Length: 306
Ligand code: NCD
Image (tube, rainbow, N blue to C red; front, side, top):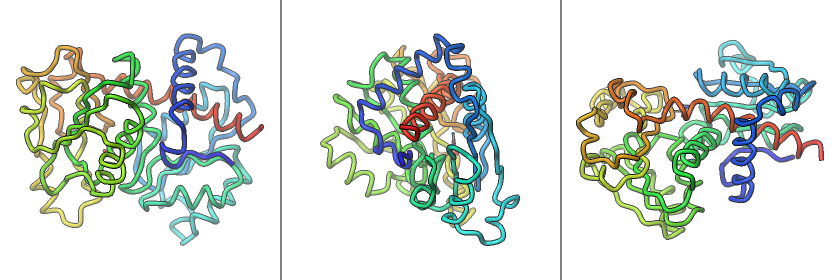
C-alpha cells in the first residue's frame, strides 16, 4: 500500500506529475469536483494544527469526498493509551485514506506499517512534514517557473523545523540548487540532514547567522517560527524566539523577484508590513497546499485501487 511518510517516497517524476495535476485542478476545478465521491478521508491530529488539518479536509470536500476527524489527542483513545499501530488498524476499517499528525518522530511510519489504507504523514515531531513540502514546491514552481537553478535561504529554527528538513530533502534532487542556512548556533540544521542530504548530494551550501548579508543572492527566503513546543526549557525559547524578524528595511538588498515563504503559523518572524510586498507568497502557499493535497489524495487513492 502506497503512503507518503517522507517526501523522498515520491520520485522527482512523480512530484512533477503531481505539480501538473495541481495546475490542472487550479484551471479546471469542476473536472475534479466528484473525483472522490463515496470516499472517506480520516484526519487524525494528535498535535495542534489549523492549516494542515483544515487544508486536508477542504481538499477532500473539493474532490467530492467525505471526512471523519480526530482533532486532538485529548479527544481520542490515544489519551487512554492506545498505540499508534492499533489506531491505524481501527481507522483502516472506517476510512479509505488517513492523514496523521503526531508529536513522535516515526509515528506516521508505524501507522503505515499497520494500516491497510494509504497513510499521509501530516507532521511527525521534529522530523518531517512532506505535505507542507508539496505546498512549498508548488509555490516555488508557480512563482519561479522551475524547481531548478535557485538559491534558497532557510532562516530561523532549522533544528526543530520539520518543514525545513522535508523541503531540503526535496530540493536535493533538483539541479543548480544552492542552500543558505541562516540560524543562531543553537538552532542549526541537524547534522544528519546536513551530512545525509546536503553534503551527500554535493549541494552548494553556506551556514551563517547574518540574514541581511545573505539576502542579495536569495531567490527564495523560507522564514520559520522558533518551535517552542520542542524546546526543553522556556528560557532558551525566550532567548532565541526573536532571533530573526523580517521587516521591510531588511528587504532593501533583496532581489526584486525574490519569494518570501513561511509554512505558518507566523508568530513574530515576519512583520505584517511585509504582507503588502509583492514578494510575500506565504498566503499563496496556503492555497497551494490545499491544491497539492488534492493532487496527493487523488494519486494515493488511485494507486490503492489499482
Ligand atoms: C508547520 C508545522 O506544523 O511544522 N506548520 C504547518 O503545518 N504549516 C510549521 C510550524 O508549526 O511552525
